Length: 222
Image (tube, rainbow, N blue to C red):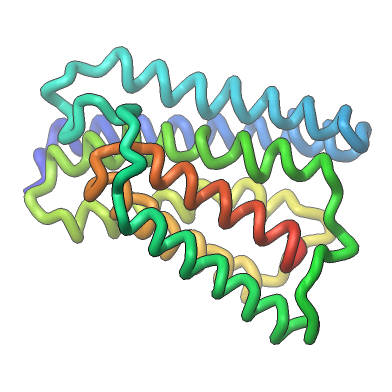
């Protein structure tokens, strides 16, 4: 059962963060994208992502009592977790197959730019995993008896936090594209959450998240 008071507090924190990120996306990231380019654009948007996401995530983790977390040391390294490597092999095969089906060849897409490596490979994974698995799921699992319920809730919330980006993309994305993206992100959020709970470490999820994003921009195109 979800403890009502703690649950409302956690969902309120998510709501505040959602609104805050939407404002940042509209009034900071969109102008940066429109006015800058290349490494300047990349570095500025990366700084924003790190300050907002990693900053908030670390603050919430280190200012929360340990007994409110199901995993007290989320940053503990665990690279002996075998499902990590099975998952990596699976997503690599999936990405290669998808690239071949879509383009009838496997190689770096024309839209790929070296600047994408910084955000898609080094920044996004650690920032998003810190907030959503290190803090939100870590607290949520402590409140909910069912692991599956906790994983599903955080996966849905993880998908929804991507709406600010989808809704501010120009030209506007079709509704069906947004819905399909939300479903994909929710499934990935579930996977990252499962890796976190089973390994009791953020690092397997961070690695898989980063590799997924990297393969998307290199092989598929964003």
